[in-house]
Length: 146
Image (cartoon, rainbow, N blue to C red; front, side, top):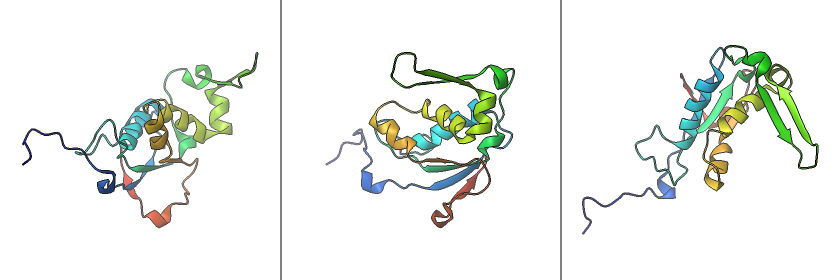
């Protein structure tokens, strides 16, 4: 007989993953990134467990039209290191949003997810597109307003 105080653990067979689309046009980068990271983790579900990946798949649209406040447009920097001496490359937000707008949101969201194998599995469920078009119509995603 089960004790009523036993901890319930969700099995991987019972995880119900949904597909959602989020339009980030005109939204603040940090605020929308934290909300998307929460959905990827599954914190919006009653069955949330920190040790399991039970979040939803997220399709992000209009990544090129995300906003930042203050002087971050000129001053926010992104660093990339090749692993070799002197191999650090620095790019500012203005250049990154014109060349690789998807990368801006991907980096912000990835850094808000847990580190390790669970975080990498959550990150794989993120699909970011610079414009309105995406290739996941077959999954019948639902529109989510954040």
